[in-house]
Image 1 (spheres, rainbow, N blue to C red):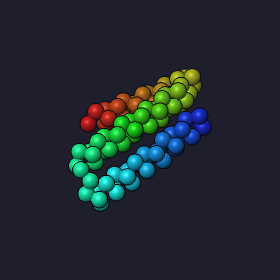
Image 2: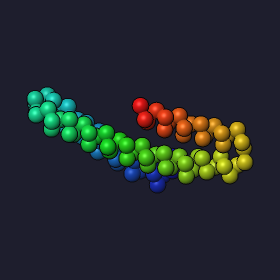
Image 3: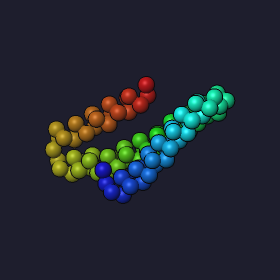
Length: 91
């Protein structure tokens, strides 16, 4: 992962970690269910954004490198990896 991506992704994941700890406290404190579900939804959205940043970096660096290399096997492998990840994301 490129440093330009890694640093902001780590910050984002740190914030997400804090959000999850907050959700744990909410459950422990018997907070209103809808408020807990709302926070869970916010964490999922934040994770999706982190995932998008990482995928963007992967395409912009790893896939681009495979294309530039001219190695057909590596190119097919990178495309297959992305297709697998996108297929899993729909589940």
